[in-house]
Length: 288
Image 1 (tube, rainbow, N blue to C red):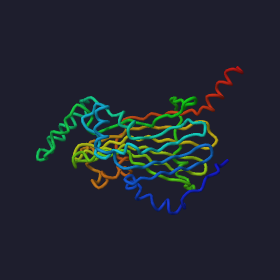
Image 2 (cartoon, rainbow, N blue to C red):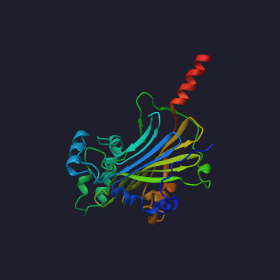
Image 3 (cartoon, helix red, strand yellow):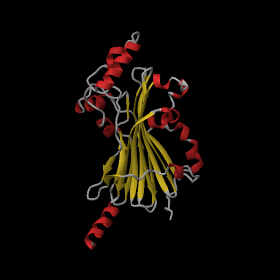
Image 4 (cartoon, rainbow, N blue to C red):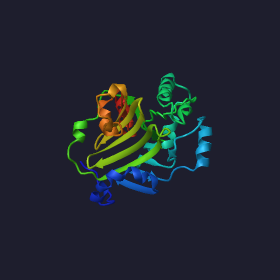
């Protein structure tokens, strides 16, 4: 069984643009792609205006927000029945701690001590998570019908994803980025690819504090045609720079390359049951 696709841009031109996707976050664009009962919406807009950022920071009780915040950017996967999941910057920031965390502050202190000549070293010690680390894994949407989340032992078959299959649609959306006063980077973006038999999404938060640590929070979402659920995996990987001393420093700036060298700290696997699956279960219970 394969989905019937709505044609959009030429596939070759789409693939050629992959290397410059991040820069597209600064341009306004809106793409809709329909496949079967699903529609993917990728909206990219300009950085939020300073007055809007200040108002949002006050509402969220945070001293400041990321330098580049794309408040109107969103990647949404929605079923024709209204339910689905989306990824946006505001909800991602809501998962950032607004209080001091002893580990993070200790890290900030270490950073300060190693940057005594910097004009900004003391600015990182604030009563909030100055790294903007977020464990955001998406926002469920829907009114009368909603996806239900349950723990599962089932894993995404990554080997299956490596199989050569035509990419019908690809896009990447930047949610926010901050350069930590030129001493690192904190960035979160989401990208999706749709194939004839499935779709795969990766939401990645990447943190690099120069001379201190590298952290990656990944959310992977996978749905296969014919199945009435999605699989979602969330992981945290982190290592100090001292633990990475045998790894070439050139890899520190490449999330895809450095990820395999980081220590796995946390892994959670979930099954996102679609309403049709919930209905089938209810019917089975009545019959029994």
